[in-house]
View 1 (cartoon, helix red, strand yellow):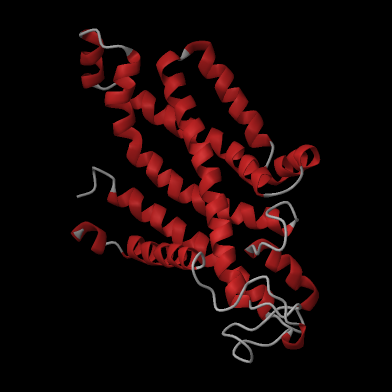
View 2 (tube, helix red, strand yellow; view 1 turned 90 degrees about the horizontal axis):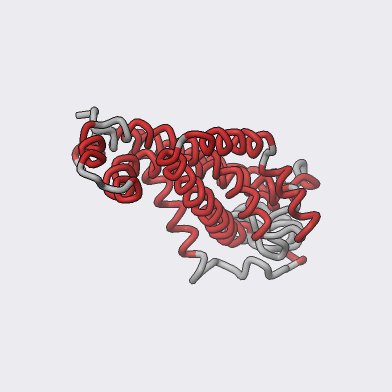
Length: 271
């Protein structure tokens, strides 16, 4: 705890991330107004003229939409990162155990996935299964797999050269048991840090997909769609673009700072 308090980057990232999760969870039980409720009489009201953050072109409360959008963006991103992390980590540790031709095949496969950005993947998936939340999760999660596979492989290979692992091999322990007992616990810190950083990237990517109409379908509010809808009213109601843009920026900033802080905090060499 004392080490954490001495790291302003970690503290700022933690506070921003905590606020993000708090708003997202609060939206499940309370919002100032129903986010999908239209009130044309009060359309395009400025902040504090009607509601805390004004209304959009349909008279919907912007604050309520931002709150629900936080949950939609965060939950989609968490599921996508969970998919990428679980598959990528599993692939990484298996390749570290087997090496040889499997390592070559997997690494070239990672290169191929990296060559196809998640937005293009979502467009291709949308052509087959339709756009929506599931498409966004699969597209983002697939792009995350090689990130975690490469990280896990590199970290695991270092652990396999340690003396205690060599000793475990010498007494006849299986590679699977060594991986579970020695390798995974010793690379877990790096995976946790990467999850935090990739979650920020996933939120940004999800916003991009929603902006293009490939995310959650209306009337579910998402930050990316709020930005897309605001394009027509930039001169008349600039807050419609400014507010979701700031929400995305602060969410990504907070998660990146939290990841950087965790990297320093979990580094055993840092006293």
